[in-house]
Structure formats: C-alpha cells, structure tokens
Length: 196
Ligand SMILES: [Zn+2]
Image 1 (cartoon, rainbow, N blue to C red):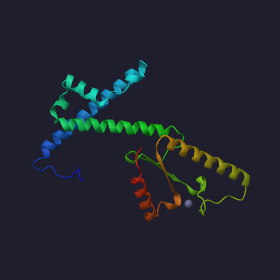
Image 2: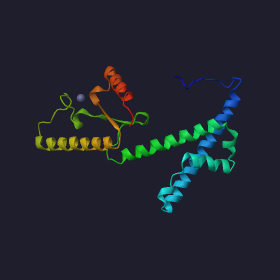
Image 3: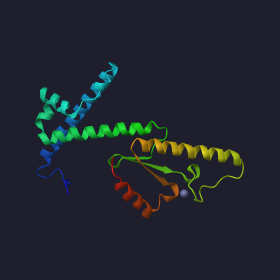
Image 4: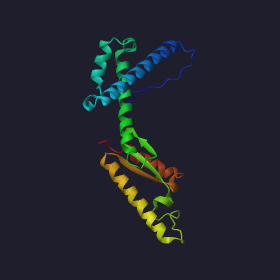
C-alpha cells in the first residue's frame, strides 16, 4: 500500500506559498515541542523526579491545547499530530542510539527502522576468518596473537550485549564493501529482520 507521495514543486507552483507557510508552521511546532520536552527533562532531572522526565504524547497535546499554542492551532489536527509523532520517534531513536554507544563499541551504522546496527570491520584487526587480509605478522608473534584474541573477545562481548538489547547485529567485512551483490543480499536480510 502506498501511503506517501512525493511531489517536487518550484516556487512558481500555484500552491507554493501555502505549502511554504505550512512547512514554516510545522517547523515552528516541531521546535517548540522539542523545547518543551527538553525543558521538562532537564527540570525534572534536576529535581530528581525521574518518573516525570518524560511527557507522553497525550499529555503534550493536552498542554498545547490548554495554552492555545499558536502553531498547533494554525495547523490541521492530523498534521500537528503527525509532527508530534515524528518528534517522539526521533527521540526514541536517539535514546536507543545512546544505549548502544555506551557499550564502548560504536556501531558504524544504526538503522532505527530495522532495529539493526552494522559494524564495518577491518579484516586484519577483527580477524576475518579465512581472509587473506587477516594475516599474522611473523615478528613478535606472541604479541599479535594476544592482541587478536583480545580484539575477538571484545567484539564477541559487544555483539552479545547489543543482541540482549534487542538489536540485530550485522558485520560487514572490509573486503566485502565493494561487493555489490553481497551488499544487496545483506540489505535484504536486514529488511526481513522482524522487529521484536
Ligand atoms: Zn576479509
């Protein structure tokens, strides 16, 4: 089902002015609601009222109606609701991202829509099994073996922590980044990952 249509118009289009104005109001509402959420978060964090740091969408709409907020009033109801919905979605994705960033291993790509994190790993440092780039230097052999074992253990730990948080973890190896056929296959796999 197609629910979104994209039309590209120039400023000479007969609806341009109206659409431009609606975009302006939408931007204002987005920023204002964002400001409200941030203020509420910081104020209640300071007061250590952790259960109140987050307003839900319903409370927010109630607040905007009560104060007769100018942009909220000027926009059609479903548009303002959609803006609030988008903002909440962005915040949710932000919190999720901070969660995975706290794990010492920062994913290279984070795909909120698919609950998926992607690591692009160097074959040498992360030991791509069977890959010719994952050679072991002859000198200082013991040092390298020890280093590689530590890297592998660290990767494994980060992967299991992310999985516990509900992420689908995908590894793309350095030697694979130019292989379009393989990348397409990985993309299809990511898209078929079912959100929990
Ligand atoms: Zn490789």
